[in-house]
Length: 263
Length: 171
Image 1 (cartoon, rainbow over the protein chains, first blue to last red):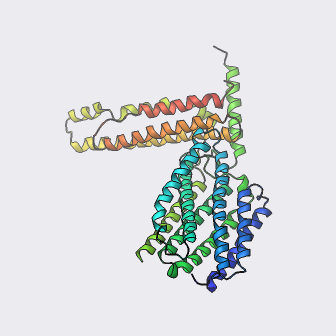
Image 2 (image 1 turned 30 degrees about the horizontal axis):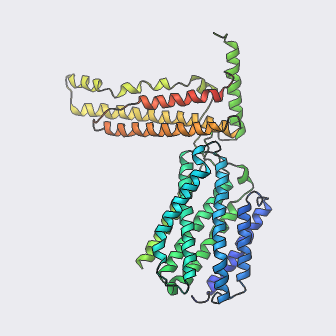
Image 3 (image 1 turned 90 degrees about the vertical axis):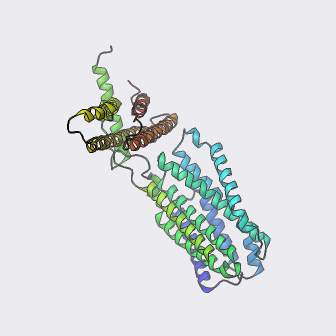
């Protein structure tokens, strides 16, 4: 694969700014502690980008630097999904169906399926390095497996709603979109590295920049306290009003009980 | 080129699907009016007349009337099915209210976490019964089979009974 063109370099610098911006926003909103895996992942990605920027994309240093750090970032993204899953689970506490054991089984099944589906596309070594192929196979397997898991989880949340923080949904949505874009770009690259290698990399970076820009805009302090509309609401205003209604109801029932002599 | 188009279309389809799912999740929940009166007067028994709406005896009686025409029978069936659908929609609203009460109690920390499990089981049973009735209603349009509302009404009644102790522990 040749050196990156001017557009790709521009997207690269933009992604550096976006990553720094997103991390900065999390720190600014004091959410970095709330989402340690996401913050650590963003910091890791930022350091990696800064380190690789000193090399030409056509150099061996860049290729090996990318090759050895990419699996770490892929695993970090998967860990982020676990962090988000734990946050979602908080809204479903008490539900044995969503135990960690069940989820591990679902995730194992989706990863196995993803590996079986992706393996044929990565067996013919058209790339200069079989290790590169292996990293791409690992990447698409993890991303598509986690994606199947997220889709199943979100579909379940639609059917059986509970209160989930708005920010958690924003994180989930951003990572899912990134997984789709990354997997698609890796597949495009596999068609013909010479023709699609650089182009798919540029598209992936552009899409990642757009996703991160939207992410920065959608993450808010309010989103941390505001649950999404997935839990049924009884009144258009606040939870307090609903709780007051329930209190009133209990009081009304209690006073009626006192007025009625025991039979 | 076909491969490129397939990859791009698949990615676009997946992105659209995911966007739709997250958009649906982020949408404000339906506004359901709730008052102590509703809870106090709520009874699944108000839906019992449903069981008589599609009784075969009514259609048989109509056939014996002078001037009967098959179109009359079809019209009656269509109207009755329409009424049943309206009732079904109300049953669903009532069930969602009950689930909402449970979720509100959980969110307020006024109920044990086990209530979540109970609400989940209720939803499974209700979804099964509701879809079963929906399918039976569709078949009724062609005069096939019978519609059994007892299961659905029973599920709604059981859901309310199970929630009662959680909602008013003083009683």
